[in-house]
Image 1 (cartoon, rainbow, N blue to C red):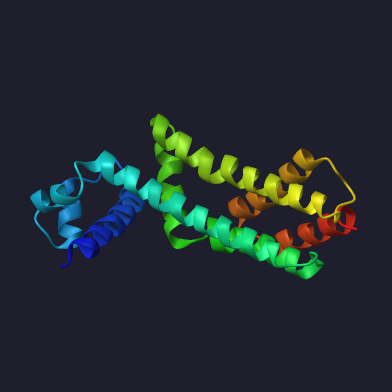
Image 2: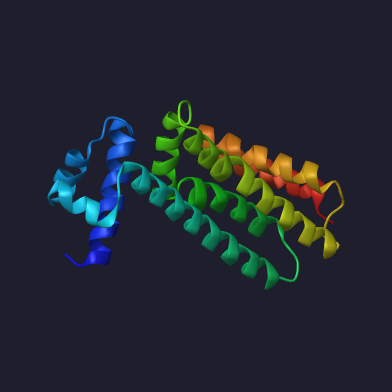
Length: 190
């Protein structure tokens, strides 16, 4: 196996095992067996489980940052935001971000680990609460500057939008999210 591919395979198998069994229950031997290499070979790529865990969080942050950059670029290319694209963007927030295979598995691990691991708690809060809320606030600032909003309380708009996304994340109810986003759009946009 090529070094970069082996590293990626180790990360993917670690994520799968951590999500299935829990971080504490997975040994380096378990991981090596899943990858098909010797346990000592993993240490060529990672110093230990914590470094693996940190790499998984970094991987999720990279996905989040790439999605944010692509969204902001797309927003910059649109003259004004129409209702259906707004609803589609909200659904994509759920399906493309929260339900992204890498992020959703990591969130499952973090949700368990955050109760007794301060770094996991911080990563979960960043991925689920702080980073999305910061992104939404930035989007509503842009929309305000473009004079597309009826309501200028950007913090309240971002928090309400965030709450709809979180409810959909926890319930998985896309139809309810779509309806909430339509109502939100109709009373928020000019």
